[in-house]
Structure formats: structure tokens, C-alpha cells
Image (cartoon, rainbow, N blue to C red; front, top):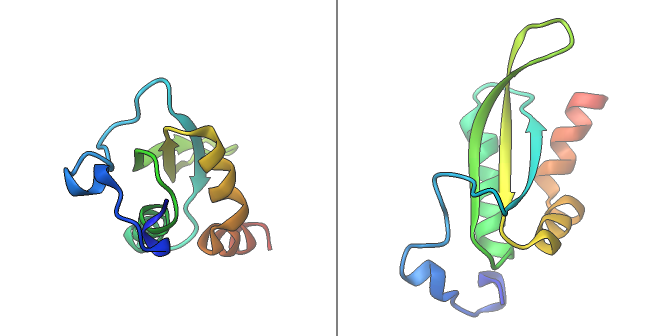
Length: 104
């Protein structure tokens, strides 16, 4: 049960929930970062996942190329349970704000 429901996650207690890398078996999503500075958006995603989901996860910055071959920053999020990635996509208010800024 997530932290916002009043239950402590054992992985949080031992410091093993947030990872610094994304293992191959994690379900992932990549989000284009829209504004400067990017760390605020990433912190919001991280805090929402920490408070509302249960499984292990990783939030990191990734660099890539857009269609004009310009370097862009992206946020890559990996979650151990694919169902929780669906929950993130449907319920995270920061994700929907970010997509609205990008796609108008």
C-alpha cells in the first residue's frame, strides 16, 4: 500500500526502493522535459511515484535527438511493476501538465 494511504513500505525503510539505474526487467516510459530547469520536473515525478506507488523505481535524465537532430533532455522512468506504470500514466497530474505544455 502506498505511503499516502498510511502504510510504510519496507523497501523505503531499508533504502532499497529508489534505484540509480533501470534494470532490464523494469517497465519504462520516456518523457520529454519541457521547461528549464529540468530538476524541478524530475523531483515532482519522483515525489509522486514515492508517495503513490509501491514497487521499486528509477527516475533519471536521458539525452537524445529530436527530428531536427538537436540534443534534447528526456526523463526516463522505470518501474518494477508494469501495472504501476499504467497508474502513473493515468493519475500523475505533473505528467498531464507536462504533456499539455508540449503539445499545446
